[in-house]
Each structure stands twice: as C-alpha cells, then as structure tokens.
Image 1 (cartoon, rainbow, N blue to C red):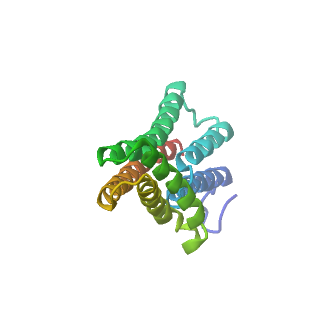
Image 2 (image 1 turned 60 degrees about the vertical axis):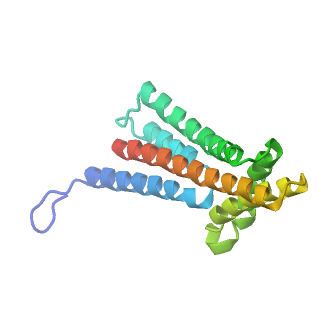
Length: 179
C-alpha cells in the first residue's frame, strides 16, 4: 500500500508492532496485579507461554523456561518462608505462625472489595498481624509478647512480598525481551 506521500507502509510490520505492544501491555498489567495479592508471577508465565506459542520466532529455550518456572516457585516459597521465619524470629509460636498465614489469606480475600481491589494488599498485611496476634493471645501469651510476634509476622509478610515482586520484575523483563 502506498500513501499519498509515496511512502511504502507494510501492514504486516504494523500488525507485528501492534501485537508486540499489546503483549508488553498485558505483561505490565499482569505484573500490576501484585497489588491485588494475586498470583501475578504465574499469570506472567501464562502470558509468555501464549506469546511463545503464537509467535514462533519468539523462541523460549528450555533453560529459560526452567529458570522462569523455578523463579516463580522460589518467589512463592520466599513469600511463605519470609513470613514464617520472621514471625518465629520475633517469638511467634508455630500456632502463631499458622495464624499469621491464615490471617494474611483471609485478609486478602476480605480486602478485595475495598479501593477497587487494592484493599487486598493492606488487608493481607493487617491479616498477617492480626492472625498472629489473636492466636498468640488465645494461647495466653502476654500482650507485649503477642504484639512482638505479630510485628515479626507483618515484617516477614512485607519482605516476602517484596521478594515476590522482585522475582516478578525479572520475569517481566524476560518476557518483554521476547517482544
């Protein structure tokens, strides 16, 4: 197709550019779902798999797949262990640790309706704190000790979440390189 100015426009190149742009936009939107406490890293991997299947020239080697899958799995473990380890370091019992994990999950679900879904993150953090605090108080620990243990659960949740976001940033970068 020739334009009025005599330049040659290649529709297939424009469509490829549009497809790559939409792929990158989908990746960024999937990464942003970290704010909703969703499994964003796995969503990123699904989008990358779809792109690799749709665009044969966007070859993803087996080594890269193993790296990306391992990174996503490590991020999930890091989030769990960060909270568990930190709460234990601050004096939480095993029951308090489980209370913080359950509280974080319940808090995330209860927070979804607030702030257009963005309430899931602060409610997950509050749930980690509250879950540990309630279980420790239920086990007849002094308030000071229970608050200290709950603070550890909260800090661990924050650091675990930060690690999960960092892993997601690496996955996002690897995906954008395929576009």
